Amino acid sequence: MTKVIGITGGIGSGKSVVSKILQLIGYPVYSSDQRAKEIMHEDQKIIQQLTSLFGNQAYLNKELNRPFIASQIFQDDSKRIQMNQIVHPAVRADFKRWTENQVSHLVFQESALLFETGNYKAFDGVILVTASEKVRLERIKLRDNLSEKEIRGRFNSQMLEEEKKKLTPFVIYNNGDVFLVPQILDLLKRI
Image (cartoon, rainbow, N blue to C red; front, side, top):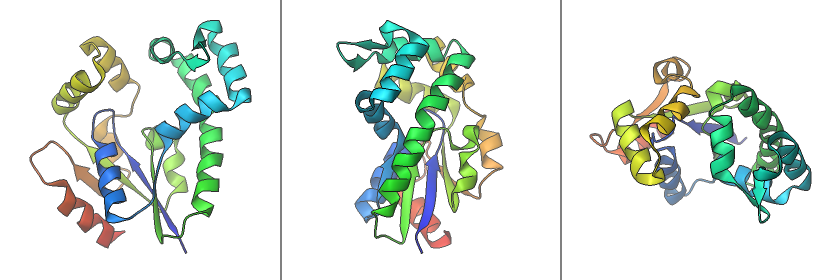
C-alpha cells in the first residue's frame, strides 16, 4: 500500500529544497506548482476559464502572464479563490493519475496551500517546512526580486505558521541553523 505524504510550507520556507532532498534519496515527488504552471499552459479548458476570469491580459503570446495574474490574485481574494477553484481540481486529478503510476511505498506531493484548502486531510501525513518570517522574506527578495509589500501580500494570503504547526506532528525547521537531511531522515522513520 502506497502512503501519500504532503509537503507544504509558506512561501520561502524551503519546501522545494526538502522535495529535492527526498528525490535524491529516491522518493518520487510531485510538484503541484510546476504541474499547475504546465496545466495552465496546456489545458485549453483551463486557458479559457482563466481568460474569462482575468481578461485577455491573462495570456500574452500564448504564455501565462504570471506577473499580471499574481498582481490580480494577491490584491483580490475573490479572484484568488476563483482561480484556485479552476486550477486545483485539475492538479488533483493529475496528481491522482501520477500516483497510480508510481511504484514506491511512499510518494510525496509538494503543495503550498494544503492547509489553506483543507486538502491536507486527503493525505496519510503532511510535512510542514517552516522558517522565520525574516528568513523567508530575505529568500524571496533574492529569488523573486519582489518588493517587501508584494511579499507581505503573499504572506497574508497564507495561513500563519503557528496554525499550520497545530495540524501536523511532522515539522522541518529550515532557518539555516539546523541541518535538513537529519530532520528528513528522522521524519521518514516516523512516517
